[in-house]
Length: 283
Image (cartoon, rainbow, N blue to C red; front, side, top):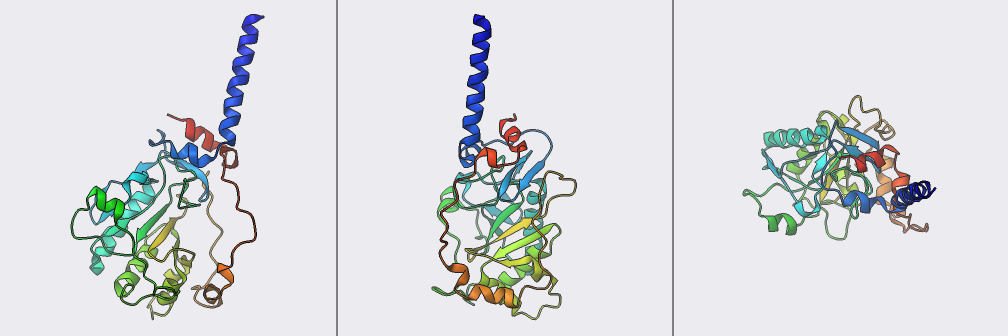
């Protein structure tokens, strides 16, 4: 009986620990892990509610790129995302772009982050700065302290032509034209500037979507890789180039009105797909 009681108490203790982990903010759990899980790559869930098994790390430097904010340890993603960054860096050189500065990707096992992003959770998102790479290898201090520069006129929603011109337009064009891209998020003023160009092929504009806060970088989102059955794509983008009434809305006050809803509580492990608990525990 004594042994049975000890075993019962142990089972109860383990269940309590598991329950506590389920209720703890997922950002704390995933932010504490700095190595990917072993095994095959597997994005799980959706961009803002998921995780990734078998993530790979972007090298600090590569042909045509340098990674920023190394202390955040957010250089992880799918092999497709790492390959995309390398392809964009190579493609951009054709227009004379000196090199790309890579901001946040995701965490070693994806999941919610403590700051900065609601998405970037399944290894398919990356931020690219809207300024060319310096012509030297950045020091650790520079990578932490250099800031991305807004391309908007101060206090407006319109681009500053001195900071956003043909080079930046072509960079986004190339970013949107590479295979696998689902969406690219930019400030509304950037989208407006792209819409104003007489492009020979405007189809790429469909993927370039206006969104808050993207005035000093653009956010690339890849579609779920083929065969990734646990990965959930966003709904399809509406047809058209997105340069009409849909864009005009972003130049009204409506999108920027403060929300009257209370802030949502942080996601817990229980809020994520069940497979994410296994990803978090895996070796």
